[in-house]
Image 1 (cartoon, one colour):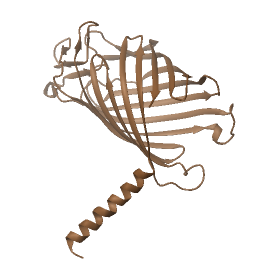
Image 2 (tube, one colour):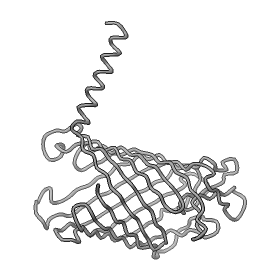
Image 3 (cartoon, helix red, strand yellow):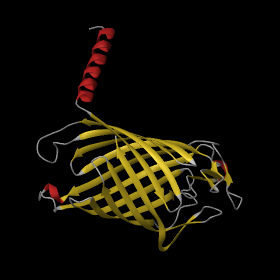
Image 4 (cartoon, rainbow, N blue to C red):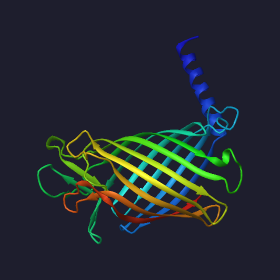
Length: 287
């Protein structure tokens, strides 16, 4: 068989496989409005494709799939585009990789800047409205379990989930020569480099309008290996309450406490005892 014929056969085989996968896939979208007492407001539009993949027999493997997710988030100070791929090799595990890019601008009415830059010398940041591109690459693993899978029933659903992620965040206009830093979307002072995030969730699901109550602990280690690294992790502790109005519309409310303090001038992060952070509300509509 000639090289041209082999190439055509390979292309047709790939096309047939992709056609078969997408023929059995499901698509979904959502609109989300996020508000908090910080104060902050953000709108997100999401779209995902769920493709059955490497499915087997039994409850652990029969639902194996690959989800490809796209998300566009816009706030008064920034816009972010993210894409993630989440593979479920068994019901109790998810493996994810993804990335995001974004940029920011000033919002003088609330005196908030979406992009700030520090040259490593001055005591304060300078605003850097749309001066560069924020970027992030991430990889994570989640382990999850619902007791209703073993003891079926309306009142037997205890949700357990833990997620661990390493990510690389950077800013294209950072002053790397002077070990300068930057801030995106009021997230605190960062330098280009590695970060870690962990989540631990314990929840209970019931057949009411208020259908889920959960406790969530988030852990962060930012600026790993650079001059801004903190000696200890910082924590966010939140109580999740989900209200399901209809099959498509739900509201999630999360009061949060944190051990992270961000200096109002330098934006440098430090650790403190637990203090109130915010109350966040997310109104989600499934398309």
